[in-house]
Each structure stands twice: as C-alpha cells, then as structure tokens.
Image 1 (cartoon, helix red, strand yellow):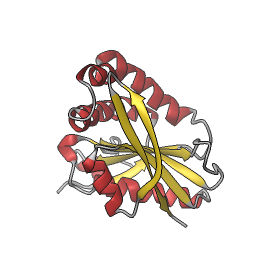
Image 2 (cartoon, one colour):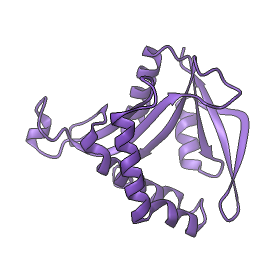
Image 3 (tube, rainbow, N blue to C red):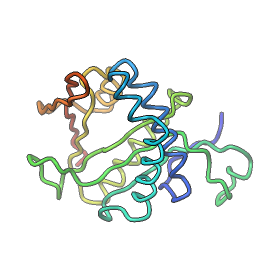
Image 4 (tube, rainbow, N blue to C red):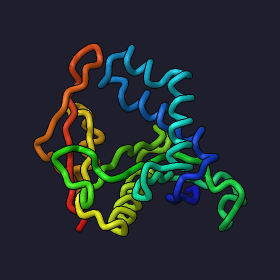
Length: 191
C-alpha cells in the first residue's frame, strides 16, 4: 500500500485539486444531477474556474479559519521522504470555514464546505483521514459544531457522514437545476 496522509494544500496543488473535484463529481453525482447541469459544472471552462478558485483559497483565504486540506498518496520514494519535492499525489480534498447559514453562530459553528475523494482512490481511508484532520483544525480554532450540506439522494455521502456521527438537523434547501434537487444539512458536535 502507498504511503498516505493529509496536509494543507499548496498553491501548486490547485490543478490537481480541481481535477480531483471534477472526477469525484462526475462519478458521484452522475445519478443525482441532471446531465446538462453536471456537464456545465465539470467541463473544461468550469475546471479552469475551479482551479483559480482553489488557488485563491490557498493563497488568500477569506479568513484565517478557512482551510483547504488534501489527501495524498506517495508517488515514489522521494515523496515518502519527509520534505520530498513532490509532497504526494492529491487524491482527495476537504475545505472548511466558519458557517454562514443565518441560523447558526459563525463563532462556534463551522461548515465542511467540501469533502471529495478521487473515484479511483475511494475506500482507502482518505475520506476518514480528511474528516479527522478537518475536525482537528476546527477544534484548534475553537469551533464546537460543524455543519455540511449534502444531496438528499446521495446515499454514499450520507452513509459515510452518519457513520462518523453526523445527523440531519432538519434544515433543507432546494436547488433549481432543470428540476428541483433537495439538499439536507447535517451537523455534528465536536466539543
């Protein structure tokens, strides 16, 4: 098994982060979202937009409490050496920051904005490592609760989060993507 880990994202990770996001969305959302909407979110122009946004998230995050973490697998012996030049191949990402929903307290409630793993690297513990590292950072920053949004029909994500102690908090929203797409908010106590 390859050496694996989680680390803060670097500016040079932005293309790999965007590519991982696109691959994860194409695989994970193909049965959840309308084809045209998913194609628009994952096409070449969108990938370039995501790359720029992820680079900005690393270089100039909105606040010091916003972070982007990446799951990595060592590609070769140099990557396995501490401080190796490659730092590993990005195979997953998690981003978080203070929650912005109007019904939560942003000083103590954080939001898991993104948690994605490349479809070729699922079921290897990357999602759990990303989630645990995220919670560690959030606790250090003084957060006591974390929320996240998931598609109501995304049984894989819901099952993963529920197995980690998250649960629906009864708040929902509906996206208009050629047809109504229901999302639910999940929450967990990390105090």
